[in-house]
Length: 392
Picture 1 (tube, rainbow, N blue to C red):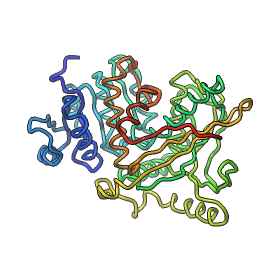
Picture 2 (picture 1 turned 120 degrees about the horizontal axis):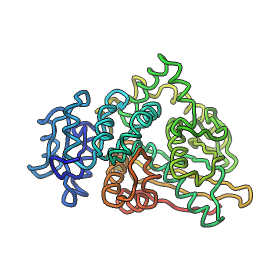
Picture 3 (picture 1 turned 90 degrees about the vertical axis):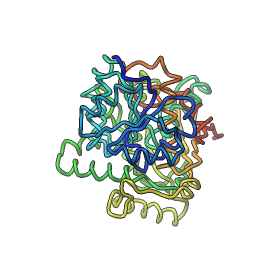
Picture 4 (picture 1 turned 45 degrees about the vertical axis):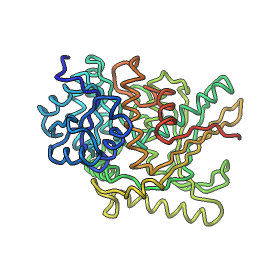
């Protein structure tokens, strides 16, 4: 396709809360290294963001609306890749994915909306492969640290044992920060769709929803509190598990099942030891039920910069092999997961795809399956993440 300009990357939804954080990171880290621009419905708001982050006056500003196919087609002609922060994606994202898939423009987003993602895979995989587009969902806290945490553990297992771990569990030990307003809005949209359509509810329950044509063994449901012997602590359902587990299984499938076709994976959040831990675990269950409700952050809302800076997360992954025992990996992030860390992660995904992953074939990918070790290196070097094999 002949493009109207040679822009490398455009941030769509740049004047929204998450979009502004992505723009700030792009401008600070890569402003002089790549050609980039911003897109959204209001050029005035885009200009204000440009000025606030100190980007040059000639930074490309593109007027585009998620409901206007023509404007989206014009947008994707002007860039090699698009980062989209405009969610809920099931409401506002489908036309842009279609435009990128048909035009051969790379696309990355923050979606954790698994049913929508499956719909996009079914609708646009062939178009993307034909055009040369690389489409990558879930490039933020859902699900990069989890998908890459399993990838890193399995590489360590293969180095230590000569084979992958047949069973891996992720345990969130620390999560200091908040989920984004976009995540909460996506949850509300998904629950509304499930309430009105029994088929959507069935899809949400399918651990292999994102692996068309493949269904593996029964997976732990992770919907009740339990005592984890490995940690000596109570664990509770993790609100993002129904997203992350699907992406981990998709990665395994996209890579040709290096974890095995019988691979089992689950995620839970650590509540604590003793009776107090059990009480906290039960409280987490109640909080999960209200997630996405009126008390949740709204799109466009979020924590202050000071609050984002003091956030962090720590996730333990434990892999087991019948013949070799146990191996553990810790993945940590040094900023608020839903905002500060996510804005860095999706940008590093995009730059990695553009600069380090020219060999990645066209199609619809997960970040880890597409970029693996190259992406881990970027996240460690630039985005405040660490990946560490632990003893025992």
